[in-house]
Image (cartoon, rainbow, N blue to C red; front, side, top):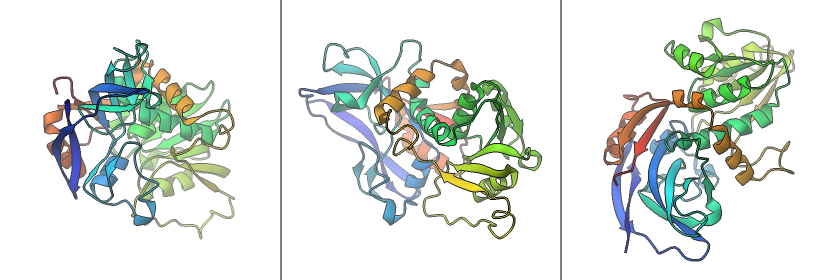
Length: 325
């Protein structure tokens, strides 16, 4: 029987590697050997910190999660591997799967999305982030010539900025408190500003900062009667907003964007699989390599997760190498 190694969250900021048996794939299933996984610094760190509100325990389950919140739980959704057993059309193909950090796994065939040959396997772990960015832009619906700001130069914010920059005439500025993110913005082909220098009167502002200050800045800098797209998820952290100032006078709108479902504008014509396949295909763009800022062996996963949780590591997307697992 084949055994697999997986990362489990055991408690606040801590986790361990566990081994367990894998079943043999049946009809309509594939056995995937993992090449790379990616760590989502937003959602995964919220889970690692035990900050998923009890009311959201069911909605926040990852597709192949094991265990229940808060812990112990096997959580994650950025996995790229090679199909080792299953239908002949998929054997040997590199695929993306919304699966946790694990060396090998068996899933239904329709859970894997083939990765184009032009997309390197490590870059493909960004498919989950790009899928979220696609969702954000479907919600935001920018028009030709719009002035768009993205607050927060994390993995999601950078993905939104890069995709938006591909729309003709759209001027994109990435805003972040870390001046080192200026270089990332340049690699993505978009403008950059510190919060104090953020441009005003923007047609659309996307907040992907995960911070109350970021949402406040978004409200301050969007045009009158404009729309702020809230792409951050705060877990159990409360957020306070100055709605007693000019929020009503300027008739501002805050629209939530969440990747759990296809936005209403596309729900009648796109499935979640269509959206994920589009995200994987968009990763042909080599500019996304700028988001891959750290890499470690699977053996170091407990240490890496702890470092990300307490802020000792600030990578945009830290990838985990499973090739020798």
